[in-house]
Amino acid sequence: MDMAVFSDIHGNYVAFEQCVNYSLACNIHTFIFLGDYLGEFPYPQKTMELIYALKEKETCFFVRGNKEDYWISRRYDNNCEWKDGNSTVGALQYCYDHLTPKELDFFQSLSISQEIRFENISTILACHGSPNRNNEKMLPDDGPTKQLLKDCVYPYILCGHTHLQGVIKYGDKVVLNPGAVGVPLHSGGKAQFMILHQNMQEWSYEFISMDYDKRKVIQEMQESGLEKRAPYWTQVTKHLILTGEVSHGTVLAKAMHLCKAETGKSNWYNVPDPYWEKAIAELLT
Image (tube, rainbow, N blue to C red; front, side):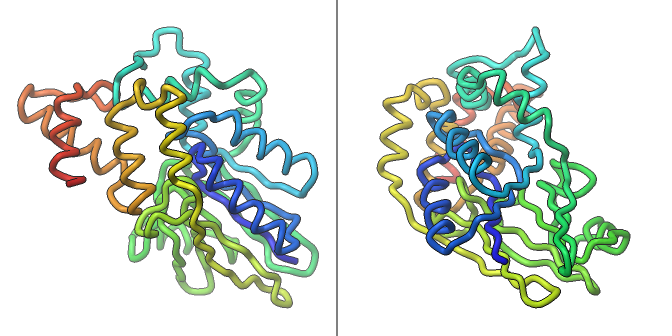
């Protein structure tokens, strides 16, 4: 048995479709999704259509990422401060405006972790961040990660969230991160995922990196109106998919730092654009 593992698609359906087609061509019919299905990219419904098609035809497992928590919270927040044209949350509002009750119900149905068990082979625990919190990063040489693995009863843990493809080993426990389909870090701009291969009673892994049509993605950012609704956030997205370097979180943290240094305060969801512009000038050029 082989399984494809996808994480952090973030709505990049062009990259996602390429990864799915590769998997199907390898005769893979079991898929594990580690959350953050939507986020930075135009036409989020196209990502969901691909997911629904796989869900209908193939064996699929899903967990909820921290991005899904944003959509769920927004569903019930009548006083939400998200605004169009705001570089921090404009992309979130764009995405939410394209969601239907079907997507929101689907996201709400998901747990933050799921046990994946097959007969005569080691059980897997799938999560987005960590088994405890979907916004917690599992990192190498990290004290909390080591403690979590020490306490964990599962030999294999699949996680995403960091957008970094890699392996963490601690004792007899193995953490596998497939990287990100949509906005991977340190990937040279290539979409990333992972294939698990059954090897007797254990699993072996194969990391995959794939190029895709980035020109189409960038063109659709403009024609969809997303770039206008989240101008600086979209600049970071373009740079990230082309180079694989400098995350949105890094640029946001810099913009917040500049804002606080000048004004004495800074809220992550409402950083004025001049500070985004300064942060981008420092970090992306």
